[in-house]
Image 1 (tube, rainbow, N blue to C red):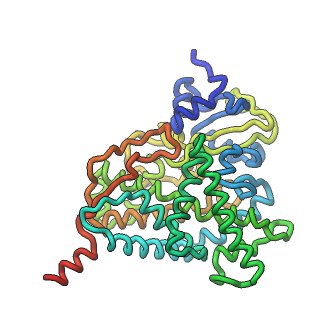
Image 2: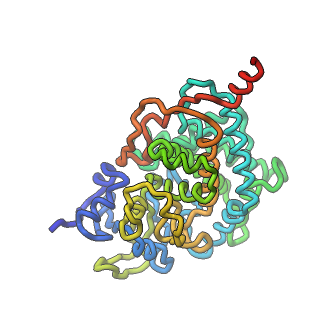
Image 3: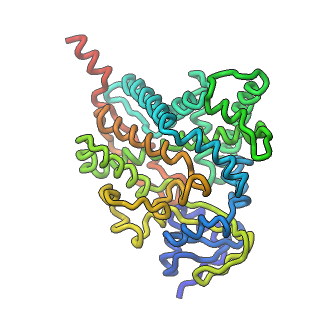
Length: 422
């Protein structure tokens, strides 16, 4: 009979997204005990595990995130590591700024306009690396939306820095340090903007997200420290830039499953919604979530000890046959009669937005994925040249090595020029 691994740090680094799922399958369980970085830990997957994970009386987030991830991906002092009343108070700032339909529609309109400008500049036959293009356009859009001034020469730098933060969370060596330097650079940049607002008063775009964070007061009535305010602003900008990975997955799905493209060309908005949900389920985005046990308890013959780290497997839960019929198949129609189970599809976390650690930017993610898919289907004709489009699931985050290269065939500007010269 297989036994749980005693120490799994190397296996996690080596296997990436599939580590928890492959171990659970080998053991025939939904949860197992191991050690990570020489510390006791429990890894688990599935709906029951997700429901347990989001029990705020059993788990907390303070101390859950490894120091390496704090230094690169999420920063220090942000909402991800908070609990209780302090977390709910801070979370209200995000739900207020991120979840209103008007705010979301404004961002989508900005992003649609930036995509159209970019498409018009593409030359037929040129090679466009979709991932890099999406990173820049998402950075440009979210900064404009948040009221963060961004000059033309800064765009490439800031998009690259956000990309380094995202890419370095699970990396070692130079990649990790590149992510640290990128975070420090962005925190200094945004911290200076926030300091200027506080010092000079109502500067910049009135009512902007930048202004809201600059003036936000914590549960004790105190303004956020500059560094923490910068971290929280990055917690809006960085995850939006991370949607570039999902943009590639949308394009990859359209390429891999041409029947989906044909259905989307008919303009069915319901099918578009199912397609986006299936992309979020099927493709690897964030691998797992972390929490810390509050007090000792027992579940499924496992002892959960106070202070122990627990990982909830997102990738494996999205491939769980108890939740999804034919989980290895890409089937958007599975969401036609979906009940909205918030413990089954957990790409942005589970449970509720207000009281749990479910990302309030989920609706922005969905809206932007829809907009990008519409663009890929309706706004441009392109071919996909020969390239290696395989996903290395040991690499976090996972992407095709090429970044998904496309070659425009016909662009709106090309048609306009052709018409003008005829």
